[in-house]
Length: 274
Image (cartoon, rainbow, N blue to C red; front, side, top):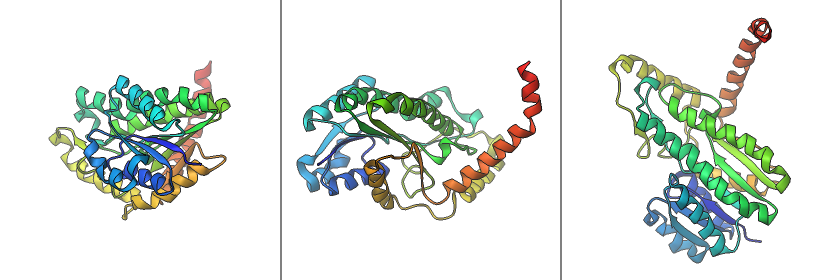
């Protein structure tokens, strides 16, 4: 039986690839983008199984209306993919208030508004699946993208709570945490803070460190099509899953380091308990 997907940020990257994956197997997709002309190729190939919706996820009322439109058009809603987002580059000191708020508006609040809009429909269905596109930067952190890391950590936090809250309704929740991929995340869609010359030397070092941690060869976004279908078809999908070959090594090193440090300072922690 065909499923209905609601995918934000479907104009490119993972959103485009997963729209194609769903459509190729006969599912329906409500595909959102700021500019629906970027979805014309999907409409031309898949016809009325694609519903293009113009959407800026920062607009809460528009998010609610878009989810309602998708549900009414296809007569149901099964899978919600919060993919819309962008990368904000800049050292923590360099990030302006406007840039910080814009990063959270899209990466956190946009996902929150769409999720809230979809949950009543999924509850009424007796189930469904919410996919949140996080990042290895949602459990680790890298210099020069601190505010991006912060937004993904926030997404991870409310999503873990969400998973527990909706489990009894039969709603499944998954955080997808990709490593480096050949998308335009660091290219055309990225934003860059005004650089402070004090960080010029470290900026070069930070880029080298990030590249070394993420590995030399970016992942192929097309390869994620089969992976995302396997997740939505799983009887017991994971709450968290990495995409790519680098994230597990990064996470392992990070968590081993955290555990070692927490244990090393455990006596002080107990002293602070009183």
